[in-house]
Length: 386
Image (tube, rainbow, N blue to C red; front, side):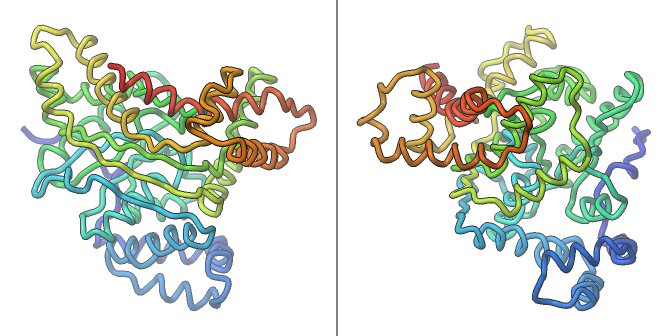
C-alpha cells in the first residue's frame, strides 16, 4: 500500500541535504557566537570553514557532536558508561524507550557512545518546542533528530501523532533505523519515571490488526539513564516552586536554552546508560491475546517501567535522600556514612543557593531534592519485590 504520509517536515536530514543545512546555519550570525563559545581557542571563521567541510550526517555526529558532548563531560570531571550493547541485535532495529533526565545529554551521550562502540546511531525524537531558531532546527535535524509536535488544536495534534506513529513504525519494521524516544513528554522533574499512556496510544495508532502483535513488532528496548548528580536539579526544583506559587506559570523558550546549557556544562559525577533486552518476549508472555487495547497499553507500560526501575545505579546519597524524605535514619550505617550524609546535604545546599527567586522556600526546595534523588531507589525497591 502506498504511503500517504508526508514526513519531510519532521524527519532528519539525509546526507544529500547536509551541505545546504550547514550553509544555512553558518550564514547566521548567532552561529558565529556559538562557535566562539564552544571553541574559545579557535577563530570562529576557522570553525565555520571546518563545519562546511562536513559531507554526511555521520561527519556531523562523529566529528562535532560526539567530541563536544563527551569533551564537556571530561571537562567537568564526569564519567560515562554504556552497558548492555549485547542486547542490540545485529540486522534488527530497536525502538529505544528511556527515562528522561536531560534535554540534550540523554540521547546525545547515547548516540556518541554507540558511535564509539561502532554501533549505528539512532534517530532521536525531540519536541518542536526546542526549535527556537531556524539554525537550531537545522542542527537538530543534522543530528538525526525528528520533530514531535507539542502544540496545536486537538485535530492538528491527532494528525501529527498519527504521522509520527507511522513514521516510527515504518522505521522499525522496514529495518531502516533504530529510534530513541523518551517514555514521557518532557523530562521527569521528580525522577519518578513512568511511561506516559499517551505515548503508547500514539504507537498504537499505526497498528493494523492485533494490538498485542503491533507492540511486539516495534521491538521495544528500554534504556535506563542514571545520573549520579543531575546538573539541572536546582532548575527543576525551582520550576516546582514556580508552578506551586503561580498556577499559570509557563516556561519561556529562554528557560529551555538555559536548561540545555547547564545540562551540557554542569557536573554530573557519572552518567550510566543501561540498555536492557527487548521486551517483545515479555509482551508475548504477559499480555493476553484477549486483552483489549487499554489493557495491552497498561501492561506494556508496566513492563517498560519495571525494566527501567530495576536498572538504576544506586549511590549512597540516594539512601540519604530517601531517609530524609521519610524523616528517618534507618539506612545510616548500612548504605551510607555520616560523612556521606553531610557531604550530600552540603551539595543540596550549594545547589539551592543557585536558585534566584524572591520568595525562595528552602524547606520546600529541599523536599524536592530529597524526592528527586530518593525516587529511583524507592522505585527500584518496589520493582525488585514484583
